[in-house]
Length: 381
Ligand code: ACO
Image 1 (cartoon, protein in one colour):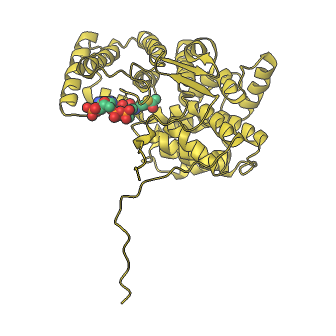
Image 2 (spheres, protein in one colour):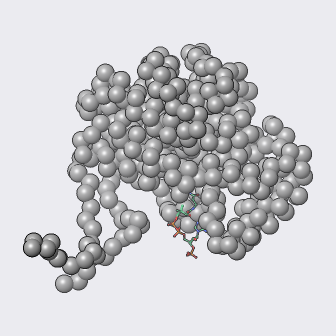
Image 3 (cartoon, rainbow, N blue to C red):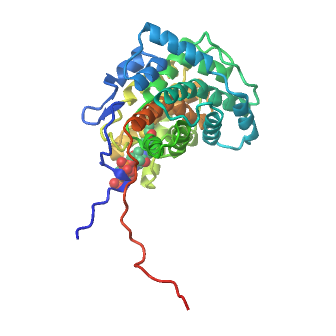
């Protein structure tokens, strides 16, 4: 009998259809429901993109008005979620706080265990609306600042920044933040989305699937990379007012040493894209805008120094986490908050996949090839 072929990491394995997004590494493109992500990131905000991912079409004016009314009415955290966050020590990683908060949001939702299409749509929109307050509140309590209530006169991204920093962000910053939310929203069968689909396939509920997906996103090989990128910058040393050239030279030297020591450098490489991540040019433009806005040329030096050295040594290109990390840093988020920001955006894609999986479900249950001891027996004497 020939042994079945094993696909470690499911690399190259096609497990199902999806109409949510299409990743094409050959043309370096990413389509959300048919629309190029670069066009969406320039011309539509994250609310429109959330609607698109869930419903398959961009909203018309009436649909958008209704969606805004719903989303803005669900931005506050229920008391039990605030209480649960307050119970957690400040030593808890923000990803653990986020995972716990989503679990409590699920447990307290009146439709928690209703898996119907309407209930799932409502739970997806409620979670999208409420989650920014989790990140904002966690960021603030780490700075010993009180919770800031949401404002319903601001769009999603402007309100997110308002709740986090307690002041209105300038339009340039709101725009760059919104671009990051759109680019992070969806990416086909990545590890966290697949996790959400596996959980959904057992007929479990939407919040359980998202909670599991957060666990998968946390790892440094996936979403945790945007935090890890910033740790790299910090390890090299961020010296405000250093020239771009000097920062680039130090970054290059750091990378050469890291690669000589056979280290994996987070923010580079991708399982699907081998010639560059389709989202990077758009995110890099947003980073450039922030570098210019805040006058921080040394960040560009560190960025290009690492990128050039990695390109020269291994021809490995940056992924989305690489420009996203320093962008969030310049906006004023603590480094540990970066992956929770990824969650905020990806809730849209995860929940779109959860609903797609539920609509044409088949239990996801692969096989394994046993390589343990041959059959043996307990001593019955
Ligand atoms: N730094 C150094 N070397 C790398 C990197 C990296 N970031 N990425 C890949 N390589 C090298 C590997 O060491 C390996 O070299 P070898 O053949 O000499 O052993 C080769 O490139 C292939 O790498 P694999 O890890 O086998 O490729 P795979 O497709 O499994 O990995 C992955 C993709 C996990 C993303 C990998 O590139 C990586 O670990 N990158 C860093 C983590 C990261 O940035 N993750 C974010 C992903 S994107 C996102 O979540 C938005």
